[in-house]
Length: 183
Image (cartoon, rainbow, N blue to C red; front, side):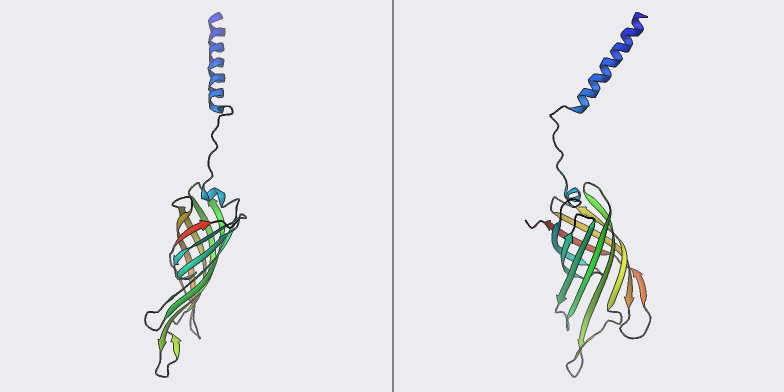
């Protein structure tokens, strides 16, 4: 019987020692919050570049709010041929995040233009479906404590300029962002 009490006492000592070792007392080193974590508690701005057929292609200005919402504006102009430009906007809602990534839902609109000049010098849009809207999901991976890359897969509705039929396609978008705060 004495051996049984000794064994129970030894087990109890081991369990309390283990529990005390795991708590670490007051010497715990605080874990530094990652950018993905800070985006949930602090408003951030970002600048970058995007390539896509929904929210625009070109330079991006992104604003991420601490309440899970983000908005961005994208626009670009290239003087190839008679001029190509796009402008778009996108709204995002955070669905889930890890320490180095986030998953979000998105809705966006865009207007695209590929110009041609006729004999009278009038520039017209070659695209039969220049206006787009759509929704989808995106995945953002943080490369560092300031930079990220994102891949989005929206279902894009291509709206015709005049009469005709709308077309629907899933088109991926790629994006690079550099985050900063304005204090």
